[in-house]
Length: 204
Ligand SMILES: CC(C)(COP(=O)(O)OP(=O)(O)OC[C@H]1O[C@@H](n2cnc3c(N)ncnc32)[C@H](O)[C@@H]1OP(=O)(O)O)[C@@H](O)C(=O)NCCC(=O)NCCS
Image (cartoon, rainbow, N blue to C red; front, top):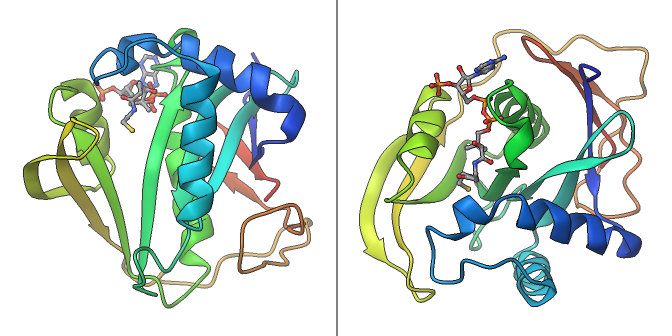
């Protein structure tokens, strides 16, 4: 597998691929009230994301296959201009434990940090998902609330990571680093973030 990943908002003709990723994450879905992946579930998640100002993106390897989903609100979460929110990070089971989740999280955080107003990233995590708890804590997220029973019948911890200002300006790459303030097709930012193992190309 190539060490390169791309993240971009899903297109209409990506729905089958999204459903395939959900099917490969039914071990995770089984932790919640609806264990089986379905198009209804996918469309509901996309609708919720849109309603919250979210950016619902596919994670692609370089042969074009979608191998994960990341859904995040880059700013203004619940009306707070300083808060971002990561709603979902899901890597298809065969692609886990290769450092992809961490590389994607670092790339999304880097994207979020471009808005200097944002100083906190929030997330929610089901209490019965200990591996993921370890993953988030390893990446600097603290449990700041919960367990709380949510309307969707999941019980979650509330996670939070406070962003510190970068110590030095980010170096420019040969890619144009134009940014935009909302997620969607109008974005044409291309920027490469190097994690320990993967080059992650933003296409949002
Ligand atoms: C949680 C999740 C997103 C993490 O993604 P991931 O790609 O598996 O995570 P990473 O590979 O970056 O890191 C996870 C572990 O793999 C290890 N790892 C990283 N590279 C590795 C490699 N090449 N070989 C073996 N292990 C490796 C990491 O050290 C880490 O282990 P540790 O936490 O025990 O220290 C993923 O497991 C997932 O999608 N789970 C189902 C959905 C879910 O629970 N989402 C979170 C709630 S929204």
